[in-house]
Each structure stands twice: as C-alpha cells, then as structure tokens.
Length: 156
Image (cartoon, rainbow, N blue to C red; front, side):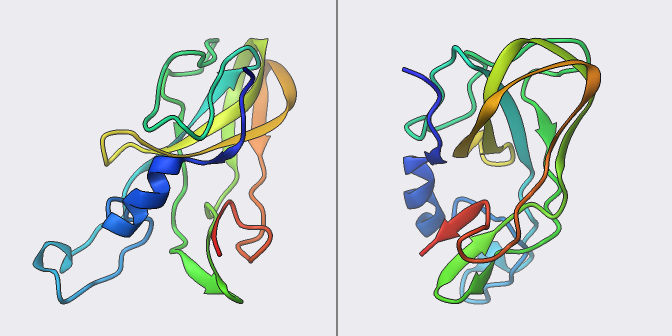
C-alpha cells in the first residue's frame, strides 16, 4: 500500500473533543481553556515506499525519510493564523510555507504528515505530492490559500 492523502480519521473526532488547539481562542465556559495557547504542529516527510495514511492516529518514524540536515520528526510548522470560516467551511492553513533547509534526501519521498506535537504527536493529516529527492538544497511546500476549496484543512 502506498502513502495516501487525507485528514486523519482520529483527528475528526479529536477536534470535536477539543484535543487540538490550532488557534488561541478563549472559551469562558470551560475553566481549562480560559488562558489558551496554540499547539505546536510539526510536519514529517515519508518515503515513497512507506504506507502512511489517514488511519495513522499519531506521528510514526516508520517510513520517515533520513538524510543530511533532516531531523526525525520533521520541522515545526508556522501556525500564526487561527482557523476561520470561509463560505460554509471551517478552514485552516499554515501561515508560512513549510521549508526543509539545506537537506540531502537521496531516497524518493512523496508524502508528509502534519501532526500535533503538543498533544502526544496526534496525527492531523497526510498530504501527498509527486516523488522528490533533494541534494544539498531546500525542499519547500508552498501553502494554499486559506479559503474553502483550497485550505490545508477543511471541515465542510
């Protein structure tokens, strides 16, 4: 089985339970959330031969890339834009591109997992792209517009 894109099935329930804090909103009816902070999100890359998909409930090192200047677990995602609504959908996109700087990743990779490192590395989603290799260069994932039909996370 190849890498498969999709929001983590577990994320869909966890978001309704309040397990993920993608923005800092104060909910006055719950004392545990009166001084909220935004969770730290990370993005890890996976080999083309891996089997990462939306049934993963948490980050896993199995099938993750290795290489020069790549740290297991990936990199921290810039999360300065809170979730919002656009038309009839709830949407969220990282506020900056995801950039792996000066890396050498010589084995083909074609997927990445977005996960919440603040909340026990819970999976948020797997995103696929064409097979890549990088030799002493940058690998940049440009983020889509934070709008319905485009955002990285969309709840319709």
